[in-house]
Amino acid sequence: MLVLAVLAAFVIRLVDIQVVNADEHRADSMNLGFASSRVLWGERGSIVDQNGAVLAGSTVLYDAELDPSLVAEIKRKGPDGEVVKVPWEDVAAEIGAITGQSPEEVQAIVANALAVNPEARWAQLKKGLDVDQYRALADLRVPFMFFTRHPDRSYPDGAVAGNLVGFVGAENTPQEGLELSMDSCLAASDGRERFERGNNGETIPGTVTTEPAVDGGTLQLTINRDLQWYLQQLIAEETQNMRALSGTVTVVEVETGKIRAAAEYPTVDPNNVDGAAPDDRGSRIFRHSFEPGSTFKAVTAASIMDGGSATPNSTVQAPSSHTFPNGARINDAVGHPLTNYTLTGALVDSSNVALSMFGDMVEPAVRHEYLERFGVGAPTAVGFLGEASGTLHPVEKWDNQTRYSTTFGQAFTVTAPQVAGAYQAIANGGLKMPIRLIESCTTPDGTVIEPELPEPQQILREDVANDTALMVENVMAQGQLQKALAIPGYRVAAKTGTAEVPAPGGGYKAGVYFTSLAGFAPADDPKYVVVVTLEEPTAIRSSAATAPAFQKAMTQVLKTYRVLPSSSETPLLPRYQ
Image 1 (tube, helix red, strand yellow):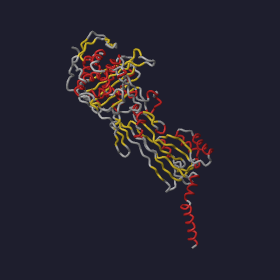
Image 2 (cartoon, helix red, strand yellow):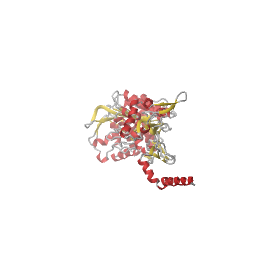
Image 3 (tube, helix red, strand yellow):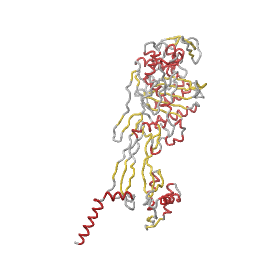
Image 4 (cartoon, helix red, strand yellow):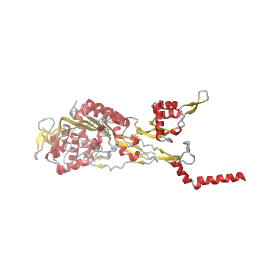
């Protein structure tokens, strides 16, 4: 009876502590530091190419921490199986050998924590340890050392697509590129584990509650990693060969409008952001606009023909310099006698005067409308972070000179993707597909979300687009760069562009140009558009500077996608009559 009475008293007291006054005691324990929690890190989503190759992914780092109040000598089994005592000083040396700290530094961390708070239960030993360091420390079996696992960002291929992917900063905070603009897809939600600890730091069973983390989604791009790598090497070499300030190569699939590569130099390695100049950490392809020059003469020709005012064989008599009735004076780059140009010949010889005369066959407002149809003055459907829209002034503000300058790609600006989009429409029978860089975002639960895109637009009649494509092919077949641009076995359509570069104080820089070359292949069954740009090349100052890069880039594109060779020769159109 006595034993039962004592036991009953204990039970009553236990119920009082753990049930009746449980909240009060729990609050006391928290005040004493016995309640604890830790973050359960969610994993940021990966960025992958069209085939699933990882361009940006997450890795794991570890933070090593100590409980200063428990730091003391530790016991281990020696080689002969006997238990030996290892002094704290020796343990500190073992730890420091792994973390890269001196024994004195490790000991100071504990001493400083206890100096601030003699009952300190936590001190930071070393942050950002890799898996090998973590395993080595864990193998020491130090009872007062514990670890916090957290994710970090890695870019397996370094600078490959670095200008597109962007990078993150501290705590995986997105800073640039798709890492920032597509953070809603990639971002993870961290969870938290809460628990109560005993006097010796152990977790009390039954007190653990978990709010699980949610990983980020997978962002799939349309680009091909291997092609991107090759073209980045190529444009870096060609930019330096031509002594240019920068260079780009943009590849667009004709049928879909998908960007298969967007390479540029200089660029950024997201693993070493500080190694790139601030101006090189973004994407010039999307953010830099320029006057397209002669590449847009094809757009002028298509606009005139679509309105029924001309055909490829329509003619004008054009000198190498001409003053129009409104006083505007237009000059060709090369002097020539009065020539009876066909519209095709005006493209092949890149005659500003002849294109201006053909441009007069339709009203300026009509040509302005066609420039808008081709995408001038509006950003592409990509919606890249900070993407430029280019500049297209209202037709009411066109002065006498602008009326004619716009026929040969001056007095308005574009981006490389806009040029690629214009040539995609010409190569695709007049059907303009929205240019896209994002394939999809796959959420953690497997839901695939594709970007919202505008509907494709038939901006030219199919016969007009096909005639324009053949004319651009004749530019290559009959032009001065025929040998430089030729790809054995394939029919190629291409047009160069040379634009003056605005000077900081107004006007244009003397003797330097922004050069470009746009084209597609195979011209008889177009599959891919390639646009190459070079900023202020000085080894060759004309648009011929872009020819080697275009020829090599297009050749690699056709190899990458195993495009069948052409089965016919280019039908030659008359240049003069």
